[in-house]
Amino acid sequence: MNLPPMFTLLRVFMLALGILGTASARSADLGPVRTQEHMIQVRVLAQGLDHPWSLAFLPDGRMLVTEREGRLRIVRNGKLEAKPVSGLPDIAPTGQGGLLDVVAHPRHAQNGWIYLSYSARGPGGAGTEVIRARLVQDRLEEVTTIFRMQPKVGGGRHFGSRLVFDRQGLLYITLGDRGDQDRAQNMDEHIGKIVRLHDDGRIPADNPFRTQAGAKPEIFSLGNRNVQGAALHPATGELWAHEHGPQGGDELNIIRAGSNYGWPVVTHGRNYGTGTRIGEGTSKAGMAPPIHYWVPSIAPSGMTFYTGDKFSRWRGDLLIGALRDQMLVRLQLDGEKIVKEERLLRGTLGRIRDVRQGPDGYIYVLTDESNGMLARLEPADR
Image (cartoon, rainbow, N blue to C red; front, side):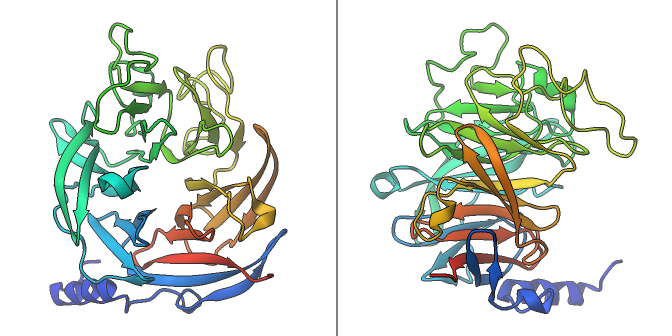
């Protein structure tokens, strides 16, 4: 339906002010909500966000929130500032693309760097790119592009794209297959890979394919369909990541140097609509199996290991946002084995796009809606 221009402008204005709501249950704090281990209270901090995608915490207490349409927002003292950050690069908000992840450098207090991933136009279409910049008041300065996905391709699917720093200060960038699944096995392309870089874009000397002829030296792993959640394990320091499967077959993987995660040669998913088999089955020698998978899909997005003290009985668990069924998934771990899965807040908030543990030990979530929210989970049983 085509809306009159004046109506469209009014709607955009109302969204910007957080006036336009969704269901009435989402317009106020919620709870207490019973889970297996805790009673939780959901505290709504901000509404009116336009498809928020990622959340980052700065040492001075501010929070940064990305909106997929291309805006970076600041939350200061628990309040969403009306004016978006200026100085962002040209962003292509096409399909699932747009302004995506945001992270602060591990030494942000000393160097001031933040990193943003987004879909950018280029010869052949669009692809994921990453910048670093300094946030000065409400403007980005010293903006530098440190990664450009090659090649750029058409279509609006599967851009990735989470950013994670490891304990050595190396940056992992998760990418998608851009809807062209067979290219996830091509070593001369970034499509369907996870890459690893120094914080300024240089290539680490010990990257697993750096000396392999015909391979892009940035590549750390391959055979990844669309990785939209990644986090470091708090004990081992290894990168864990989940990726969307097709019709079923979402995966949770431990990302190790040089590993091939199989897409599309092996998968627990099926072709959309027909349900026919993809590739050669669910396993193959030389391809790393997932440590956990979901059939049917939960459409995972965002994840964090919980290490805080506010939810003591969740300590060490993995929390994953889920777009399908609008829920938060809690996985209890025993080493690298999943021993329990709990599904929380089903249909309560909306499509959960990101989940993060804050420096205060509370859990923060973003909902992927046109009137998206930033909410904080607090214990209600203390």
